[in-house]
Length: 382
Image 1 (cartoon, rainbow, N blue to C red):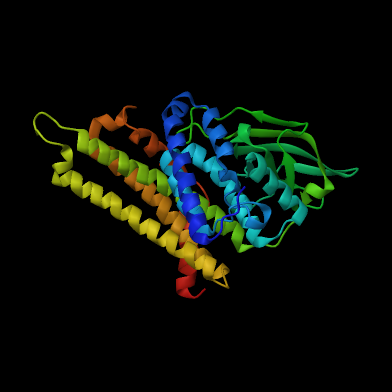
Image 2: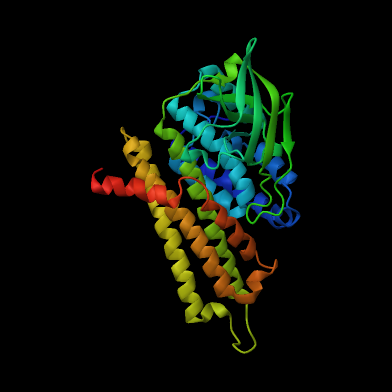
């Protein structure tokens, strides 16, 4: 990959890259959602585009995107298709946060980065399990790792494995005999890894391929096993930003779609486009305001993050930004349905799909109650 000369050149490249990729995603979104299958063409375009190297540090051949540049790029992809955008986000937030925290052994981190740069490899952290619920609420994984000569044997089942069939690396949480939670970096093609296709008929993200992953005595060498690491703010910051920005893009796509429809829809009783009606104009203004407020907060905190020396203090505001962005996406897509009327319930418009996809943003951590509690504690001095 070509090393870009300065930040302005990099920013322009990232913007063009994300816009081109979003157009490809949008072209496959409706059909993939209808079939409930991962878009192979979309994944192929993602791999070939170079986007997988977005957050890989420049020293390792990547674009070295900042948190703000990442947020802007993910919003653009979210406007194209939430399912594919989320797959891209899972790889990007992982490599971006690890590049900032420096917590992994350099050789292991470089292995994943090189794969993303050279062949568009995709990684994802798999932590959710059938019995565990949300990992953010605590609890030990039922997935187990037993020591073996030269490494470990990992067995268990992971759910909500976004893009499972397209992944190259799995970062799996498992409980070791000492009762600690370790992470294991596993090539998806490893013996004993099997995708169980359970992701069918979901309300949201129907084309995300978020199937279960079954691990049956998968051997992991000791060099790819990570003991418990101290909590680092970068992990939360990059994940929350990835979620906030992606679903913000879904909300913006709904406003864009409503605007197109309103300009084209000319009822015979009205004799002019419904975009001329004050109630439609008010609804569009309300949607635009919600998105603008959410985007402004997210971008402001991301910009501060890059410039701050003490970043942990910004986490409550990033959590609040995630809550505001996903809430705005849910609100805006619903208002778009109400404003467009009955046509919005059909597949002729993308609004019903965007409405459904936006609901998934509300389920990603941090949940609204935790985000608001974090912010409130700071306000109260606790």
